Image (tube, rainbow over the protein chains, first blue to last red):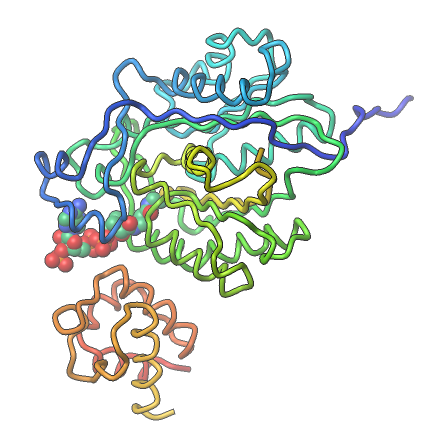
Length: 325
Length: 80
Ligand SMILES: CC(C)(COP(=O)(O)OP(=O)(O)OC[C@H]1O[C@@H](n2cnc3c(N)ncnc32)[C@H](O)[C@@H]1OP(=O)(O)O)[C@@H](O)C(=O)NCCC(=O)NCCS
């Protein structure tokens, strides 16, 4: 009997391009105050959002993902023929079957890729990036298109002030390809299986519920240690991190996580993703959207060391260090 | 540790989380009405108090702690 032969491995993988898509429609806090009992001052002080983007009926999880992906491919200098795997992290696909990844492949003209969706809620981008890195390094894939795309507005009650003020729509994408030196560090992932119902959508109701204070308590205490562990696993000193991009859940969570990461040794002037202010909480899309917009604003240069940490429903979390393209 | 020490420790946490001067954190003050601390800052204060004093302050108990004195009494009676 002959043993199983493994594929040739790659010493590392790296992000070769990033892209994002935000729907055109801007929704301000004053707009929301017209339809529910809320106000700009409360939303800005508790959540940190000034405005967010809502998808149009034409924007689907697949079309938004494809638009973001096309930009990431353009930056990476890749054509559809260069992509052999498509991963979509999403928890808000319009339908369960078919999954989104093949639809994205069809929209972009990518022929016969490995294609699957992954649901790790708001931690989806970091899980997806880990899956892409593993696939490339083990030789299952050469170049992966990894997308976080969410249309949360189809799963929240538009008049529920507990959720409609927070969640929004958008997509972000990364092209992950083989590299002689590692550009993506080991993932620190895990979950809190005692809190499965803390954020949930009952049946197919299309109405997301969350225990806001429980989530807030968990996120402000459990997530900074995940970020710190991700840096440790990558053998990177926190002082060498250029930018911290936590999932854009709530500005006060972001600031609390940043404060702890700085107290643990990151530079006091650590750049922190605070894109929630104008983008809202876009779940698995929030980290790539935030980072790509910081690049576009000239705040983050190519080669910068990024520490990303995602967290959300499950409750689930994941973080890793990677080099910014 | 005495009530005084608990109060001093709690006042330091309140100052750090909410930017209220520790000197203003006295037993008779209401967190919400006098110190202008909102529900999310209360959660952060509870998390730090748990670490510092070795007590558990669940969300439903937290909701009952209206004044600084309530919090000191809760910590004193629940600490290990
Ligand atoms: C959702 C969240 C903003 C709610 O804040 P909160 O302080 O816990 O809110 P509460 O429901 O306790 O309400 C506090 C007060 O604000 C009021 N309030 C609640 N929602 C409001 C809104 N949308 N607009 C205006 N006022 C509101 C309440 O009536 C209450 O007022 P009262 O004290 O006078 O009775 C907050 O818990 C949160 O952001 N948690 C984290 C959730 C998260 O990040 N989820 C994403 C995970 S991926």
